[in-house]
View 1: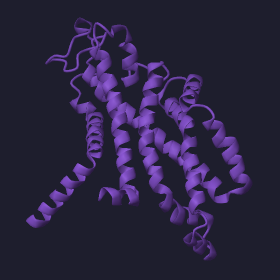
View 2: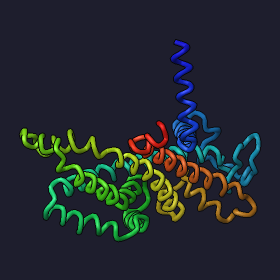
View 3: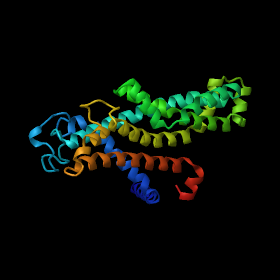
View 4: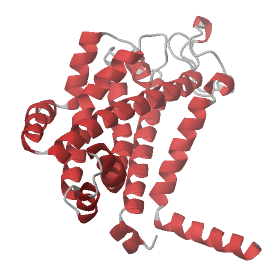
Length: 289
């Protein structure tokens, strides 16, 4: 048993040496996930509790990350902000991915005029404008709130997944195993979910992991502009907006939420790169994974 344990340990260390950025991404995301999930129990104070007597304090033993202009504990707000940002990112990616699989899968599998309509008039229309501008427009129209923010970001991001799924489906829809399933009388839904989807899901998962980084950045942008979650809910973007007027006298109010946004984005990008290397057989062979 000790031999197998030592062998597994050596294999794990070798993998870590080959992919140090992947390990860094996993550790970063694990920290944010643990901080967000444990916020109701481990956050030192109520993130919305106002204490004007101790406003704009520097980091200390009582407030590890200081306090903001209303005396609210910055560390508690960062932990609750991680919970909010991760929830929004997962929700947006799930909705965008579901829409992308549906629209891109239908367009790529059926082809013909269906593909022309969905690709030319739907995907191209949404991709003609930057996703963040679409999200700002829809968020301003729908108003602030969790559901409206998720919907606005999903509307601005689904077309990229649809385009990727369409290209992948078109690449495998005429393969021999698909023709064999079709000849045996399998329905279109069975062919897609049993034979096509398992063979195209790898790049889609990589895109989804990288897309979560984009969602976190977009959510912070909308919250910074006042179009995200309304106060007093803690959000990294709203924390940056509140800290603008105290950039020089209390720079920690900007540095801590900015570092949180940067860390989460880097973590998801590193994880996406690791998934790409792990799921691509040629890259795995080159890296010796």
